[in-house]
Image 1 (cartoon, rainbow, N blue to C red):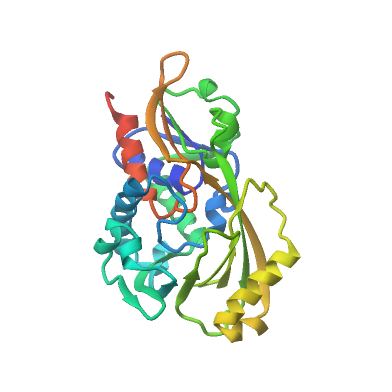
Image 2 (cartoon, rainbow, N blue to C red; image 1 turned 180 degrees about the vertical axis):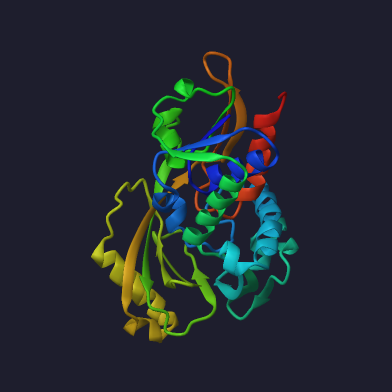
Length: 304
């Protein structure tokens, strides 16, 4: 079978298939380091994903995997880090929140020790696991799922599904971030206002402090906007003033693949071959990756 898509959804699904003994290849339009997954903030949290009930269950299932991976941070790029979701309340988060170890209300929000994933390192680690399992990853663009020469096709193309399936319901939610030299901040912080395009968060990563962010619906631009970057830094500096003088190391832009609901199902191509769809994870692709990959791998293997 062939998994189409080289972001976290595609690589995780391929890992589960390959390590279960399936013969699988990955076709990716671009190297993993250039995918939307590579520029993700990397904080585990079910953000901008529907349906909420399923997303909560998927997030919890994936959380258990990340907690185990966090025992080997140098190998996996996954660490457990303390932080605060400012403005959040436990009774507004859904049933899943009651099952997050240590999640508690604090002054101004909720606090927890959660997985923070260094995405470039993590994607490289997934690629290594695939290589050890005998799975090839090829940089190869797909323009027609029906033309993919495999008995089973697994579609993990994220925003690419909009034209590939085609599925016009998939649309971008643009996120812009700034990477600065970390002035000594060891905890993460988020303050999200869903009624605005701008939010405030910072996440310590090994390569620097990641500042965010934006959530701009139907914006396809991958070019960093200087005014937006300045506003991001200013918002974060209001929380931690030392950020104001931090040296800027780089800018990141990613397009979250949003959809009214994650598409995770098995269908048929025109010639009758199975195609398994696993896309539309919005701002929580990393958060739900392992649970959705397990379901997709099960659907792909059914009947084989």
